[in-house]
Length: 264
Ligand SMILES: [Zn+2]
Image (cartoon, rainbow, N blue to C red; front, side):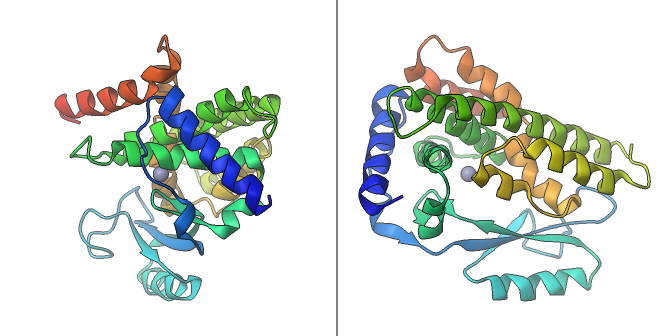
């Protein structure tokens, strides 16, 4: 993607988010394009649980600017016999890395909608529950890209539809795996078999989404995936049940708020 196409895609997606999906962004990603960064995730080996003394209490991940610093921290957790993973991240709500733009225009578009949604949520909900925020961000990323693709020649709608379909299958597989680990319904080969099955399902995803799931299947990987995958399918339905695209933003904020009201 050359610089001109990149700039146009970002501007068009931001405009579509605000005018068609009811999302408020109100700024630009353009001035802050930097390097990828790295998250270290950790879990107990025998349960999906964040070891209390690994990070600050309640944190599931820590962010690092370089792979080297993430790697050293990961080593310190591995010698304490925890499951760990280093996740390479190409974007967050404030910043897009240059490397993101090596992926397809469809994938970049999904990421843009995802990050714009985080900006919309910022300041609207005080107790942000990431199990809903991330899965709504992914639903808006995928479905937003599909809707947007109908208006531009830059993206292929059929490919995005297939990719979304594969992503939903991945999310349901991850959800079932999480339930199995929590309910201790796992045999000796559980993680090995799950890795093989996941590789088969992810082959239908686009290039960006494949790399998101191309990690060793262990408990830290499931801790990483849970916020994005566990509620994806039901949150996608919330969006599809709206009469107008413009209600997507409002409906997802309401859903996250109501959920808190019921004491999640
Ligand atoms: Zn996110």
